[in-house]
Amino acid sequence: MGVFLGGTVAANELDDYETGLHTAALSDTSGDVTSIALNSSYNQLAYTKVGRLVHISGTLVISSFSGSWGSGVLRMTLPFTAADLTDQAGKSTMSVGVYNVNFTAGTSPYMQVTENTTNVDFYVSGDNNTGGKCQPQTSGQLYIGGCYIAT
Image 1 (cartoon, helix red, strand yellow):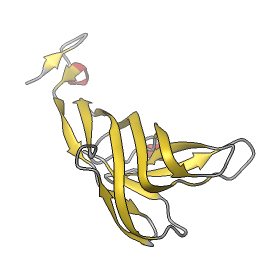
Image 2 (cartoon, rainbow, N blue to C red; image 1 turned 180 degrees about the horizontal axis):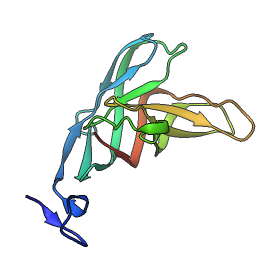
Image 3 (spheres, rainbow, N blue to C red; image 1 turned 90 degrees about the horizontal axis):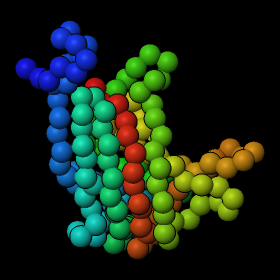
Protein backbone atom coordinates (compact mmCIF):
# COMPACT_ATOMS: atom_id res chain seq x y z
CA MET A 1 0.00 0.00 0.00
CA GLY A 2 1.26 3.43 -0.89
CA VAL A 3 0.69 6.99 0.25
CA PHE A 4 -2.47 8.78 -0.89
CA LEU A 5 -2.12 12.38 -2.08
CA GLY A 6 -5.23 14.54 -2.37
CA GLY A 7 -7.74 11.72 -1.86
CA THR A 8 -8.15 8.02 -1.21
CA VAL A 9 -8.87 6.69 -4.71
CA ALA A 10 -6.32 4.64 -6.66
CA ALA A 11 -5.49 7.56 -8.99
CA ASN A 12 -4.14 9.47 -5.97
CA GLU A 13 -1.95 6.65 -4.64
CA LEU A 14 1.82 7.02 -4.79
CA ASP A 15 2.86 3.37 -4.75
CA ASP A 16 6.39 3.52 -6.13
CA TYR A 17 9.43 5.53 -5.05
CA GLU A 18 12.98 4.46 -5.78
CA THR A 19 16.43 6.00 -6.02
CA GLY A 20 19.63 4.44 -7.25
CA LEU A 21 22.47 4.33 -9.73
CA HIS A 22 22.25 3.00 -13.28
CA THR A 23 25.46 1.83 -14.96
CA ALA A 24 25.00 3.20 -18.46
CA ALA A 25 26.06 1.46 -21.65
CA LEU A 26 26.64 3.25 -24.97
CA SER A 27 26.37 1.86 -28.49
CA ASP A 28 26.18 2.91 -32.14
CA THR A 29 22.74 2.40 -33.75
CA SER A 30 24.32 1.30 -37.04
CA GLY A 31 26.96 -0.98 -35.53
CA ASP A 32 29.93 0.76 -37.23
CA VAL A 33 31.38 1.46 -33.79
CA THR A 34 31.56 -2.03 -32.31
CA SER A 35 32.28 -1.15 -28.67
CA ILE A 36 32.33 1.97 -26.52
CA ALA A 37 34.18 1.84 -23.19
CA LEU A 38 33.29 4.29 -20.44
CA ASN A 39 35.67 5.63 -17.79
CA SER A 40 34.78 3.56 -14.69
CA SER A 41 34.74 6.76 -12.58
CA TYR A 42 32.13 8.32 -14.91
CA ASN A 43 29.81 5.51 -16.04
CA GLN A 44 26.83 5.77 -13.70
CA LEU A 45 23.73 7.92 -13.75
CA ALA A 46 21.71 8.75 -10.66
CA TYR A 47 17.98 8.13 -10.96
CA THR A 48 14.88 8.89 -8.94
CA LYS A 49 11.63 7.12 -9.83
CA VAL A 50 8.41 8.54 -8.40
CA GLY A 51 5.44 6.57 -9.67
CA ARG A 52 6.11 6.27 -13.40
CA LEU A 53 8.20 9.45 -13.68
CA VAL A 54 11.95 8.77 -13.88
CA HIS A 55 14.59 11.50 -13.57
CA ILE A 56 18.21 10.72 -14.54
CA SER A 57 21.34 12.83 -14.20
CA GLY A 58 25.09 12.45 -14.31
CA THR A 59 28.26 12.62 -16.37
CA LEU A 60 29.57 9.93 -18.71
CA VAL A 61 33.13 9.98 -20.08
CA ILE A 62 34.19 7.82 -23.01
CA SER A 63 37.56 6.10 -22.55
CA SER A 64 37.77 4.46 -25.97
CA PHE A 65 35.81 2.95 -28.83
CA SER A 66 36.44 0.49 -31.64
CA GLY A 67 35.48 1.25 -35.24
CA SER A 68 34.50 4.55 -36.80
CA TRP A 69 31.27 6.50 -36.89
CA GLY A 70 29.22 6.09 -40.07
CA SER A 71 25.47 6.48 -40.46
CA GLY A 72 24.53 5.65 -36.86
CA VAL A 73 23.92 7.76 -33.79
CA LEU A 74 24.94 7.33 -30.19
CA ARG A 75 22.53 5.26 -28.05
CA MET A 76 22.44 4.97 -24.25
CA THR A 77 20.64 2.55 -21.95
CA LEU A 78 18.05 3.75 -19.44
CA PRO A 79 17.30 2.26 -16.00
CA PHE A 80 13.61 1.52 -16.80
CA THR A 81 11.57 0.77 -19.93
CA ALA A 82 9.95 3.87 -21.43
CA ALA A 83 6.15 3.86 -21.67
CA ASP A 84 4.41 3.16 -24.99
CA LEU A 85 1.47 5.58 -24.97
CA THR A 86 -1.18 6.75 -27.42
CA ASP A 87 -0.01 9.25 -30.05
CA GLN A 88 3.63 8.73 -28.95
CA ALA A 89 2.97 10.48 -25.64
CA GLY A 90 5.71 8.28 -24.11
CA LYS A 91 8.34 9.74 -26.46
CA SER A 92 10.25 12.53 -24.78
CA THR A 93 13.43 14.53 -25.08
CA MET A 94 16.09 15.24 -22.48
CA SER A 95 18.99 17.65 -22.35
CA VAL A 96 22.64 16.82 -22.81
CA GLY A 97 25.71 19.01 -22.62
CA VAL A 98 28.77 17.78 -24.47
CA TYR A 99 32.54 18.12 -24.68
CA ASN A 100 34.64 16.56 -27.48
CA VAL A 101 31.57 15.41 -29.44
CA ASN A 102 31.28 16.14 -33.16
CA PHE A 103 28.07 17.63 -34.50
CA THR A 104 27.14 20.17 -37.15
CA ALA A 105 27.92 23.81 -36.30
CA GLY A 106 24.82 25.84 -35.43
CA THR A 107 23.00 22.85 -33.99
CA SER A 108 22.38 21.70 -30.44
CA PRO A 109 22.43 18.16 -29.05
CA TYR A 110 19.48 16.48 -27.36
CA MET A 111 18.41 12.98 -26.34
CA GLN A 112 15.23 11.32 -27.61
CA VAL A 113 13.61 8.53 -25.59
CA THR A 114 12.27 5.65 -27.70
CA GLU A 115 8.93 4.27 -26.49
CA ASN A 116 8.76 0.68 -25.18
CA THR A 117 12.58 0.35 -24.95
CA THR A 118 15.30 1.04 -22.42
CA ASN A 119 17.10 3.29 -24.93
CA VAL A 120 17.64 6.95 -25.57
CA ASP A 121 19.29 8.18 -28.80
CA PHE A 122 21.43 11.30 -29.16
CA TYR A 123 20.64 13.74 -31.98
CA VAL A 124 21.27 17.37 -32.88
CA SER A 125 18.76 19.98 -33.94
CA GLY A 126 18.99 23.48 -35.32
CA ASP A 127 16.99 26.18 -37.03
CA ASN A 128 15.95 25.27 -40.59
CA ASN A 129 17.91 22.04 -40.81
CA THR A 130 17.05 18.37 -40.66
CA GLY A 131 19.08 17.64 -37.54
CA GLY A 132 22.01 15.31 -37.59
CA LYS A 133 24.17 12.89 -35.74
CA CYS A 134 25.79 13.17 -32.35
CA GLN A 135 29.03 11.16 -32.59
CA PRO A 136 31.46 11.37 -29.66
CA GLN A 137 35.22 11.02 -29.79
CA THR A 138 37.57 9.38 -27.30
CA SER A 139 37.44 11.44 -24.09
CA GLY A 140 33.99 12.67 -25.12
CA GLN A 141 31.96 13.87 -22.15
CA LEU A 142 28.17 13.75 -21.86
CA TYR A 143 26.42 15.80 -19.17
CA ILE A 144 22.96 14.25 -18.87
CA GLY A 145 19.74 15.39 -17.25
CA GLY A 146 16.06 14.82 -17.83
CA CYS A 147 12.85 12.91 -17.21
CA TYR A 148 10.77 10.30 -18.98
CA ILE A 149 7.69 8.19 -18.26
CA ALA A 150 8.31 4.50 -17.50
CA THR A 151 5.94 1.58 -18.02
